[in-house]
Image (cartoon, rainbow, N blue to C red; front, side, top):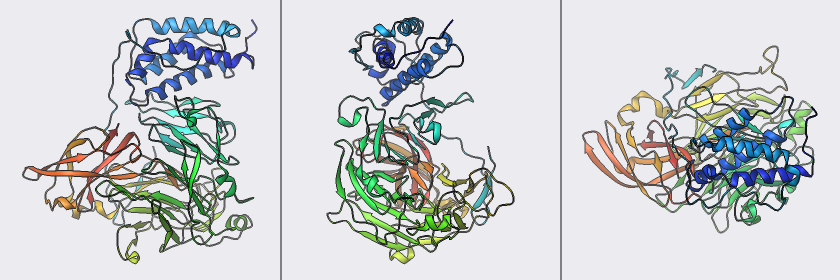
Length: 591
């Protein structure tokens, strides 16, 4: 029997038909209407729709089976914390099978919106709470220098906790991939081919206050788009890309120097974008550039392949919020071309800080103790910045870096004078250069992994072999001498609301100092690649009051984030910090 294929004309009609059928499925619409899957229930429903369309339209080497279709539907509803036992899944697959046979006669004017009003839903729901506490790692004793080797065992985290990876190289440059955590070994990636409008290689993602993702730039892409594409209201919810001339202007011919642009969501809801030496403020809702900031002094590029790094310094709800961007390291202009010819130029040793809300913002420059390219900047629970990994010579790219910088640096933003802000830490025994990475762990350590400056894996007979090992760096606040003043969280609300809504936290500490020594900090999980931690942000929440419950035990009344612009919805690590010594981090959900 000859296999039927959808024609170019019939494919859009078929896709609209899928959307129409889903809009009539009361189980799905009830789950979205009542947000049984969380605030991003609509996003999960869109994912289910994309999965169904992909099931029918992508090339197949094997027949399509009804059981596979039913599995997709069941998994989609489970992602919405919904179980259906009324036979509607089987009815849906039968209707969809008819739809596949009759796609040519589908009314092209039917809308694809998946939401309808549900007055009497018969869907049964079984809400399952996501595991919010990460098990403590086996605490290997840290060496005296703070380093421990860990045994071996682009992206964004949605408000639900699902990891989203967009784009990539070659055949994967328009794909989107999802990974939803589970409590057993049955988790796996789900891929949606051709889900992006444009090819995205070396692009940057940022989660937005409404749970969407903005995807900016990439190689030969001077534009941005959103995921999911179809949302009600607002021009930025349409299925299109938006031209951003700023990306063309910052592109150095033959060198680029504007890939993986630095994105930071600001408290006013606008997006700060830094590329090369330039930066702008983007109103992504109106798709217009609001402000052009001054160039960072020195005319030295800071983005890939002249890879520096950047953070939004911690936001503090205990006072008037003044957002400030910090950019460190990079390579002098022309370094990439020189490195291609075997000449490795010394990297940049400067950092710049920019208070973006000032009426006339300007960069304040400081010098690091050592030049660094391909370094990672990680926000520590104390509010300090760790600068780790990288090289002293050359640029990012295959075989283009030399002189590994093995000593981490801790930068303390609030210390005065500036000369006291940088501290050099003990070195690692392993070079961490191109394709290395670093992230913050729940216990306050930094997990460092990888290094591969070669186009293929190369473990022998090269100056810097491919390194697949992991190691952890322990900042000084983890030293046992601070255990008497280290707080231990005893109880905590796992869900925190907006608008300054109060929540309660109890903790224990052997040697309590004063209320002024306390801070409650939430840290968004980031995805780190090519020297930039996408979505990284820290907010110091407002402490309303402290109560002595019993000896060595205290209660805190804390106000949640003021707005989703300050802390977009999703999971955060919450640390209680006492006298600059953090507790173990606890997962909380902001919604």
